[in-house]
Amino acid sequence: MRLSDELAVVSTVDVFTPVVDSPFDYGRIAAINSLSDIYAMGARPVSAVSVAAFPDTRLPLAVLTEILRGLIAGAADCGVPVVGGHTVKSPEPLFGLAVTGIAHPDRLVIKGGARAGDVLVLTKPLGIGVLTTALKNERLAPEGVARVTELMLTPNDRAAAVMVRHGVHAATDITGFGLLGHLLEMARGADLSAELHWPAIPILDEARTLAEAGVFPGGARNNLKACLEQTRIDPALAEWQSLLLADPQTSGGLLIAFPPERLDAALAELSAQGIVARHIGRMLEPDETGIRVMVTR
Picture 1 (cartoon, rainbow, N blue to C red):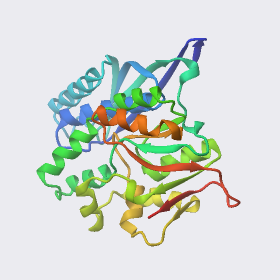
Picture 2 (cartoon, helix red, strand yellow; picture 1 turned 30 degrees about the horizontal axis):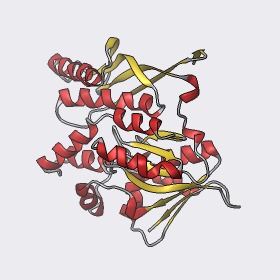
Picture 3 (cartoon, rainbow, N blue to C red; picture 1 turned 135 degrees about the vertical axis):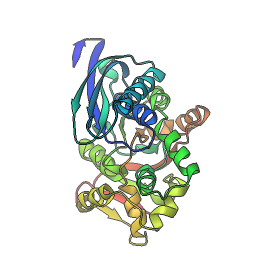
Picture 4 (cartoon, helix red, strand yellow; picture 1 turned 90 degrees about the vertical axis):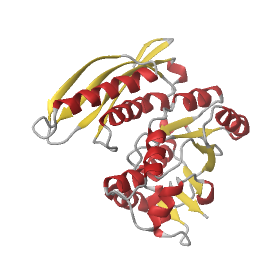
C-alpha cells in the first residue's frame, strides 16, 4: 500500500507446523520463514504480530512458552519487534508471524518483474523438505539435523540487501511450492519462459542420498504434478531429480532475476557475505507453445 511518494507499507502472514523437534528452534524458524516474504520484496520488516494455534490438551503449556520464546527471539535476531499476537486452540501446532514492512514504492521488488535475458540466482540449496521428512521418520543423522536447522535459521536479509544493490528485476522466496512452482509464478507474472540447468542447482548433500532412496514429503509429488503441464524436464534426469526441484522448502532461499551484466558482481558480494549462491538459469522469451520452464542436464 502506497502511503506517499516515498513510503509504501507491505504486509504478509505465514504459519506452518513443526519441522524440528526443539520447540524453541521451531519458533525461531517460524519467525525467520515469515520474514522472508518481506525480504523478497526488497522491503524492511519493522514489526510483527505472532499468529499461534496450539493443542493445549495434547501438549504442556511449557511447550507453547518455548515456541513463543523462539518466535520472539528469531524476529529479534533480525531487528524486528513482536508487538502483539493471537493464540487459538487447534488439533496441531501452527505458528508464524504477521509482518509489516516498509519500502520506497518505486523500489519494491515484485515476482513478475523479470525480463528476457535475466539470469537466475538461488541463495540456498534445495532439499530442506527431504531432510525434515527424514527427521520426522528418524532417518536423519544428528549432523544432518544440525545442518538443516542452521540453514532454516539463516535469514534472507543479507541476500535481499545484495539483490537490491545490484539492480534486481524480480525475486521470490522458495517455500511450499518448491523451486519449480515459484519459478513458474515468476514466469507467468512476466509472460516469459525460463531455463534451469540441473548441474548448477545447489542440493544439500544428505538430500541427494535420501532422495535417491525415495524420501520425499508428499507435497513434492503434488507440486511436481501441478507444474508438469508447463514444464519440460530432460528425460535423462531421474525421477528423484525432478522431485527435488518440486521439494517444498521451509525458510528456503531467494530466487533472484538479475540483469546479466550484474551477475558477477552480485555473486561476488553474496559470497563475501557468506551466502552460497549459484547461477542456475535464465529467463527467456516464450516460444509458440507458451510459457514454460525447461530443465536441462
